Length: 299
Ligand SMILES: [Zn+2]
View 1 (tube, rainbow, N blue to C red):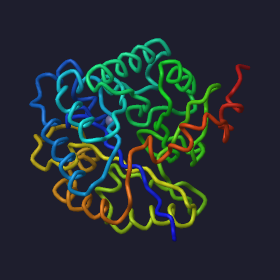
View 2: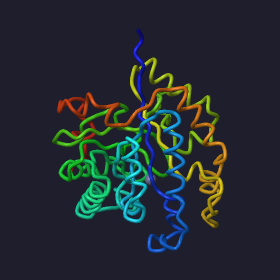
View 3: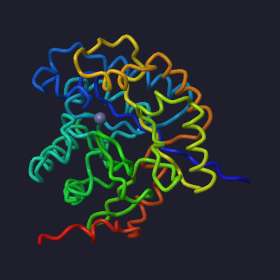
View 4: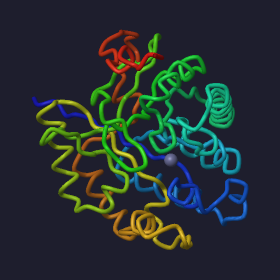
């Protein structure tokens, strides 16, 4: 019998006013003034997953957990994996090791206190771990994380580490795994195949073909991610953030729920910690990142 590959379904739990594309317009200190929609939207996501019988991993901001502890508890109660998206969406490559340590340590403790479960996974805001801040992996491990899903091995104007391995690797001196976002290799480069804006903007069939390729040809699981605000067509519009950001944020919001339904039906899904359980529980070392050894030395 052919073995079904389970892919990892993941949600980055943040509100519509916290996305990086709006960061130059909206100061963190004004976040409290926006009408929150994350709780209602995440409840809708939980309902959709329950109807489809899918378990997922919810990378949650500490800022959200503090203000909406109920949603953290409902994520856990529904059998999903609770994981960390950092405290307030500060990109890791803008932080010093000390402030990054406080950020990821504080958020893990906050989530564990509210959720009553161990938090093992971390995803950096806007995939902000790259060649320049590989020390972040050591800090994550020291702060109790088992895996990170923070590298996107593509070229993108806001993020990306195109030279990173496409498959899980152990970048630090310890046992922490980086499980990079899914890409399809074609025409000499890596193409994004992990959801986000690409999934919402492009026809469903494009994504379906990509993930099918990864599952069938490479016999590997993929990772999909989206945000609760992506299913919320009625969210307040943020003005003056530029046409590209407007387009990326607001296009096809109304179609997202239907697209997700097809995705949940067409593939098998599970939590990160279960999809990659063979890596995370083995304690084995393999696929050490070549970038680490080749990091530029001071002249
Ligand atoms: Zn995020």
